[in-house]
Image (cartoon, rainbow, N blue to C red; front, side):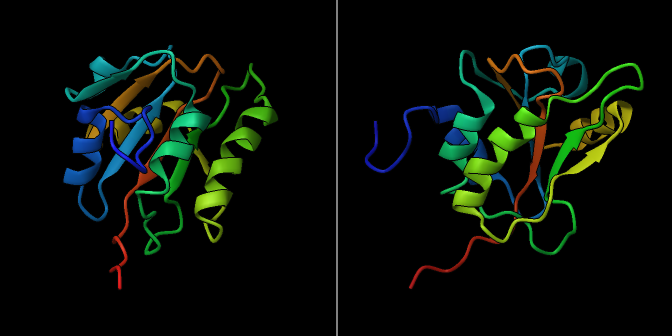
Length: 145
């Protein structure tokens, strides 16, 4: 345990966040996501909800402000509908730690899988919400004075 670091962030996830560079992406995946099919670097965070993980990660993680879409989620398939409570729950920690963050961009399922292939890592969570996956694009960490 470390002071000021959420216990939800284990050593492997902390190491991944530290090693990521500007423009690298990390996928916070729901429990249904086929992570290992799309990316070889999978970190387990079983039982952890994504909103809670966002609240743990975002105090340590600068979102990329050089792109329009540093936050990306999946669009619903035509036969499905999105539960607006999922994005609303994610916006709470996003707005708390990154008040200038833009709206979350939605992309199709296969485009999301393609982005996952190029992501730095995938974090498999215990999130059960359908279409609960989110991609975070890392920005430049501000210099502390």
